[in-house]
Length: 220
Length: 258
Image (cartoon, rainbow over all chains, first blue to last red; front, side):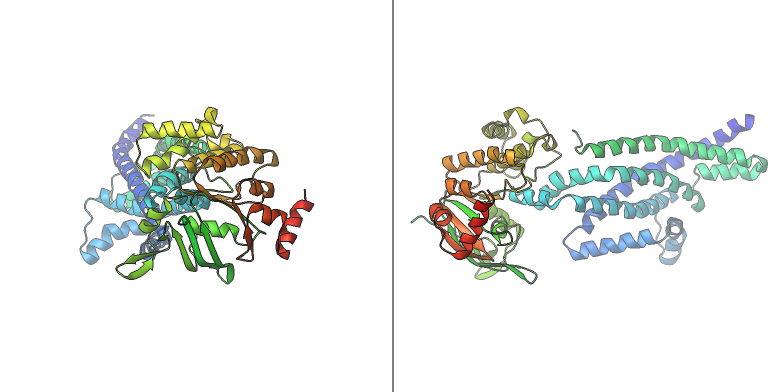
């Protein structure tokens, strides 16, 4: 039983990096998703075309390879250094999940009935006002349930950052295991438990968002 | 003779290969109530959607207060209208839709207040007072804090009218506003339109299938058939003594179904 406490202490030192990467990735992927989603419904074909290219590239290749690219290939090839490893990780995860999530944004915007746009034109809103007051508020509540799912996936994706040398939860688990081989099962069960505990509030949040979306109106 | 507020000059509209409007000429004088009747697919709705800028004409000119809606002049060259030009002109036009198109995420009151506050940038307290007054006028004073989903079709349509009236349009367009309603709810909506027609200097163009109603409130009835105005005149003339064979046939379908 002593070893469980020992292992937990070791894992705890990796929790900080996991949480930092998680929170920053959620923030940036959300921003990227909103910007890319709006760009894809733009009338400007240059904007929507370029964004479409970005989305397909990042959806169509694996996150782990993207992590290696940002971490090792870009600096080596073009002498581009993206700063600390934490930022490299956040950038790769955010660009990858931002690409996926931008498709939810695009889909939700396009599924707001055309009549809403027509009513906004009849009331003489500007294009920006139409998006800000009429389309987006309705689209966002349609996005919420799927958005929650992606947030949980981002948490799990953060475990990949140990592969570019970030000292997260999994990294410390692996270190401990390499010196205490017989305790491997305990180590990995504890790691699973910690990830699940981290996911729990996100799961509850997703449930809540599903309820809000079902209600039809955000503040109804 | 008063200058017309709206003029259609040889307006045509095609969707792909299908020509929906084939040369519409039409003057609307300020305050005039015009009913558009005709079989479905005759282009009635398209006529008013062009004026509301929801659809762009294929050719021809639409003028509002003498200003070209769909083209603008820079120096002595003409360009297709941009968003700014359209916004400057369509402020005088309002529209009520067949399917209401209320904003579902806002209360009734918020639905009515949004455009005057953010488009016309009027003071919120003043807008609120006007909106309450307007909703009272359409008989919904006790519903102002409800959401559209909590209303009946007839109530929704009355909110939609109040919302459009808040922008004080000089021309109001009604696109088959009773077609999506249960029969027992049609009356309450027509009542509001009738009051508007009797009291206002606002011009009204109504696309409608309610013949008795058209007879009652319209100054002029236009019969549309296959994209052209086939017959027009005083409601009595058109509805009681139709000349063209097509109009007679069209009207007989209504009397026989009653």
